[in-house]
Image 1 (cartoon, rainbow, N blue to C red):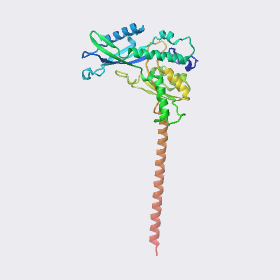
Image 2: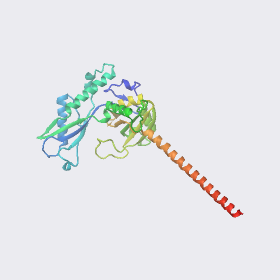
Image 3: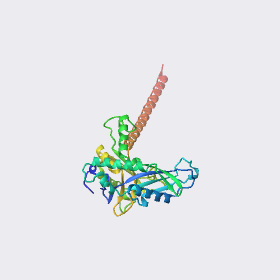
Image 4: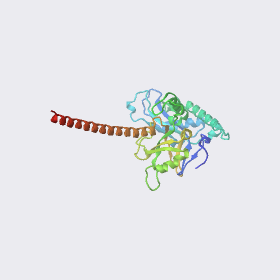
Length: 331
């Protein structure tokens, strides 16, 4: 694993982790496809892919392998209205070597490199968004968006607004800064103990994630849903969800920034894990601690009520027997 600090990592550089894993940079875009004419003919996913790949190559000189472009039409097309989308998909750009000249890799200023990268991506998205592709006389319109999990600046703005106005789990205080990252869609076997189990291990996960910063709390569990843009059947147990709370806000900040815009890759494998990443808005570990404390308070209150009830019954019994004694011996 590299000993370099996270804040020196450029947006086009790879970060080596433990267990043969690495975070590789990529551009990911979410696609939504609409009909652009009055035709009701179903969309041909293969033809649309070929048309879009050729358009990107001719317009931006970027070659997209077919496996890096996913197009899936909706199953209920006959029930959808004309203005509703007919398909959705995901576009990946993994080979980012062409961006070296754009962001000037020889320049040491990482912040400047980040700004140049984001500006290039913004223009790329704007030029793709709204284009119409003609598939043998049938026109389709393409809407393009950057996933929330790839928009670090957007998430930063969100927690700054919550920090200013308050929300569940975070009081209105300049000291209440986020410190927890949520990762979904991670391959369970990559975080499991080799030859022991296919389920994610807390020890292995801690070893891998600790490369991103000093950990305060860690939670690992099965994840049977990869995110809102996932499609198809998800096989139970193949993916895991990781919630990691860092000791310092700075570690959280650097880790989230590095995790945005990257995929996880295993050494010796061409498989990539396209995980979802976000920051914890609901106070996952705070709620867990609060629930434990609340259960303790409820249990304590129940014990007090039982004791109080017992004392009252004792007093009533004592009072009744004393009254009975007085009445029996009253002259």
